[in-house]
Image (cartoon, rainbow, N blue to C red):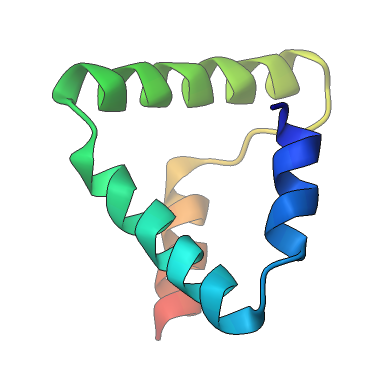
Length: 74
């Protein structure tokens, strides 16, 4: 079963069952091994680098990124 078919099946579930499934999926992410976590971060870093190289995003100084993050949580 592909992702599209799985998505269609999930949409047929009632709200309570979808919520239960979502909770299980989120909790299952905590079960990743250290190697799996590192691989996911490597993929994310590659994705971000690709976006930067393609001009889809632009760089900002670290100080600005930190300022924005602090403003978002305060």
